[in-house]
Image (tube, rainbow, N blue to C red):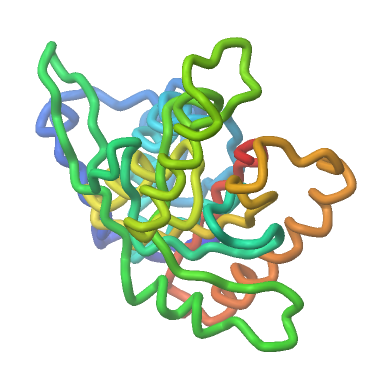
Length: 264
C-alpha cells in the first residue's frame, strides 16, 4: 500500500468513520492488526497485512484498515483489490477492471444481517479511477483489458455455479443458463470479495478499484488444469496495470493493494 499522512499531524483524515461510539473509547484496538491508538504512533506507522479469501475475512480487515487510515490521518487513500477470478465470456489471461459489483442475484448491493435484519449497502466503485486504469492498457500488452460488472459470491463452489464441488444439485445446462444470465447483465467475472470491498470503501469515502485476472472462461469449464504454470504469468498482467496507475498518483495520495490469489 502507498500513502502519506499529514506531515505535521494537524489535519484530520479524509477517511470517514460512521460510528459515533468510537469517540467514547479511551483508545481503540485494531485486534487483527496488532495495533492500538494508545500503543502505536499510527500517523507514522504502516504495515502489510494478509488474510484469507472471501467476504467475512475481508470485512474484518477492512473495518480495521479503514480505522487505521483515519487514525493515521491519511489523505486521499486509494484502495485496489487485485487478484484472480473466473471469467464470463472472456479468454483466460484477460484483466477485468470492474465497473461495479453485484451479488449472486445480480443486485448492486452488499447485503449482511445486522441485529437480525437485512441491510443493503450500495456496492459502488470510483468510475473515474476505473477509466484511468482502462486508459493505461496498450495494444502490445499481450493481454486484453476489459470493463464489466463483477459478481461476488460468498461460496467458491455452488454459489459460483461450479459442478466440481463435494455437492451439486443442478445440471450443466442450468449452470450454463445462469452464466449466460450473468453475461447478459454485463457481468464479466466472478470472485468472492467485490461487494464488500466496494460497499465499505464507498461508505468510508475511499476511492477504490477492483482489477482481477481471469484464469479461465467459466463457459468452458470449472477448473484450470495447468494452474501452477499459469498463475505466475497471469499475475504479471494485472500487476503491470496497477503499477502504472500507482506511479501516476500524486505524492499526497495513498494506494493500498489488497491481493487475493484463490478465486478462479
